[in-house]
Image (cartoon, rainbow, N blue to C red; front, top):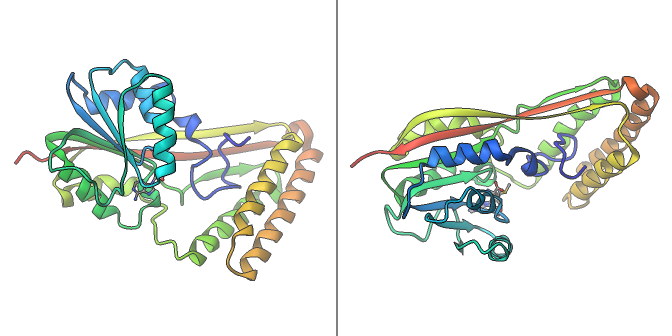
Length: 281
Ligand SMILES: C[S@@+](CC[C@H](N)C(=O)[O-])C[C@H]1O[C@@H](n2cnc3c(N)ncnc32)[C@H](O)[C@@H]1O
């Protein structure tokens, strides 16, 4: 369950990585970055190293791959994962908005599912352009977390989705979260402001369907995810909203069980991959 798409339990796509980092996406990244022997490629916001492991599997051994993440713990995990596979990747802890590299240090730069967490997207794009060589590729892939498709055959399921959206939005507001959940489709339009020529935008749909009432473990995972989110909520009103949400999830579970084999739930969201080229000087 934790790896399934679930708009009911998270404001972002964090549960989805295994689903969309598939072979097709990996080869899209490879084709887009046009790696040649000796090229230096930078992954900004590498997380636990999914990209590095997948890209290295494609046999890019002659490429000099570097990766950074804001969190040292993630960098460490990514380093251990690639070392265990004997993959030479250079890692560093660094902020996308202040990259510790000289101008034009990389032949291409990519960044996946990171700018949705960054307040100052312009600063990050400026940095991506700065560290990319003239003529080099910049690839940025982000979702639009504000535009999710959701269908449930159950009335409580439809209400749960709406309440969930409100719950996560209120939680974000209470944390003074100024990140842009809808950054994905905007990226190509921001490129020219930073000396990057937009080349193309590719859409990657991520969807899941459930037919028949989900097993109890699905409901328990959903309740747990919501409880974990509101346990840290700073005020009573949000905790109350969270508690109401859990109650609605219980009702949804009951309606789903009653519907049995006629239960249907469909979720879909979209990743937007903006491809650009750093302007020639
Ligand atoms: C959803 S994960 C994506 C990880 C990886 N790119 C992938 O696709 O598997 C987002 C990552 O962005 C990192 N991150 C968030 N803000 C960042 C920033 N300002 N600079 C660098 N990394 C950042 C987080 O620490 C996290 O590891």
